[in-house]
View 1 (tube, one colour):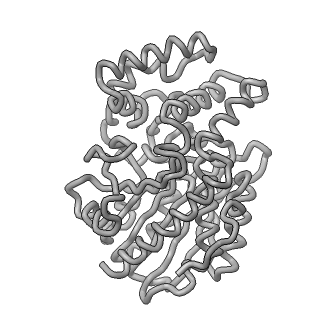
View 2 (tube, one colour):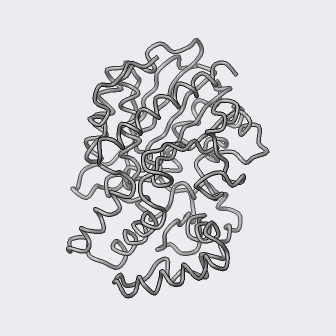
View 3 (cartoon, one colour):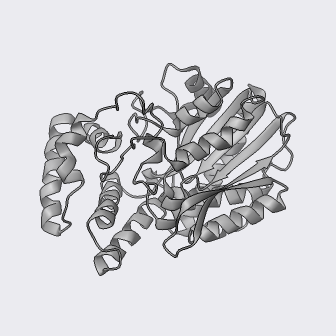
Length: 366
């Protein structure tokens, strides 16, 4: 049982370097085994970038609680704060027998440091886990809207025209049809948003490298991927990582009841996406019974969030980061995934404690 944190808002970092330092300190204090994976790129301040891991419990445990922060870099603020808080709270202080915990901090450190959803290759990591040896999945709606999604200019007038195109598309195919077209994932526009890449990127390979050494002993695993951006302000939606007919989805429903949502069942704020991180987990630990969820914290209305992603892509591809407009856009995307407000942070952390406790119970009692 976790110890109550008196000031949850203080857990959340102001930047990547601060988050990494706090995570390392909390993990060391909790007695975790630490490891670090150096990213080849640099942060905006020229600093080194890395992914950190913390392992608690028996090295050969057959049951594993696995959580990952920063799949989408700009969402690393909330994941960093949650993981640091879990460690400080003593949540994992007395683990059940034959059970271990693996926390991955900033699996996409470049995106976290630069406050971007994407990796150093402009790749959406949560769309990168497809079989790149096979023909890439297509997204016809994205092709239709490509120029509006990723404009070469960013002005009030150009955005008015683009919004008209989005509204016309939604009129024809529905609001979720528009969301699918923009966010499901695409594999042909390497300068566009939600790009899944042409090969397994550094973060993809690093996630597999972290997991694969445990393929010989882990038999049951719960996976929590920490995200933000979709849904009502401060609410942590429990999105099943499984399709409706998968046994894993049944376990998610058993553990979380009506709070669990499904992408293909139409109950989630997210549509079905291609190439998500759960595929990497399943391929790295094929012998394990995996139960995965995405814990998604709401921030801004969907249109505002998507506009922030589009604007961030524009400024990095076509704009000037040091201009007044560039700085405004970077503040916009930070707010879209990390509302720097105490009430939001408290809601996020309280929900994370509750979800982690229930996930651990499901893992050890199923």
